Image (tube, rainbow, N blue to C red; front, side, top):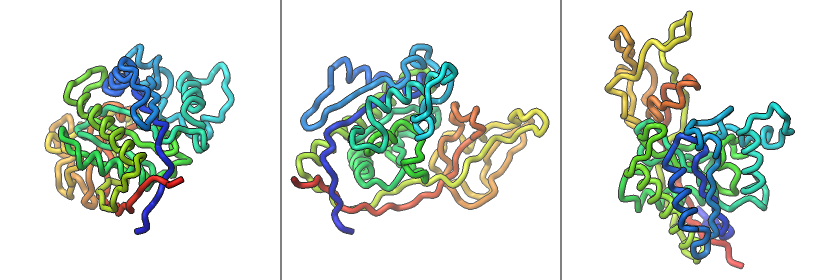
Length: 309
């Protein structure tokens, strides 16, 4: 593959508290702000608490999910008295860090999240963008505290609804398991290490280092699975089977236990071999998702370097 070149990545945003009860990103950002870490070497850093109202009340959101508010339609919608706070806040963030898909947008946006699922350290990307994928490769090669995986979404960035899509390049970090409203030292340290490695990579890239071609593995979501439900009341009638619980990324094969009904019956998986992600994620109950199922793919990366003047 031919070498790919990119402009220097000098303006970076680190965001936390997009969901107000996911504590790791909140405290990573607060620590960066406390240390006044707004510049390091070749990188200028903007660190923000994305949803301060939700953080104040320690809730995922106050009116609607902020991380679903960064579509073109919502970012350009007129503000009315009835407009939810999170839509207003998305437009404020888009003004501060974007506008989305413009030359004025920050060069890289990293949004920090927690999950109650046993996902470890997982980076989420919207497209085959070589620059953040090389950052993923670097974090994966140098992370000491946990294995690092990636989830690749199929939506084009222009249609993406999440905060990280505002930057020219971007990705989200999901790290867990961590209960909502709780801060764990091991999870905090994993996220902080990933942020530090990202900034370390940027320094090397901006200074002219070439990152060689290679391969990385990623998981692409095929479908989502809901809990079994009562056809009349729509209430769930089973929970995740103990043999599936906490086994995110482990291959799920036909006949494997999937759910355990409240009356004690096992519901077994039927379908092709796939990998479950975000198993029993707390925030997905309202979305009627018990877990995602994904294929594992191999992505070949070209070598990349900074554009020469």
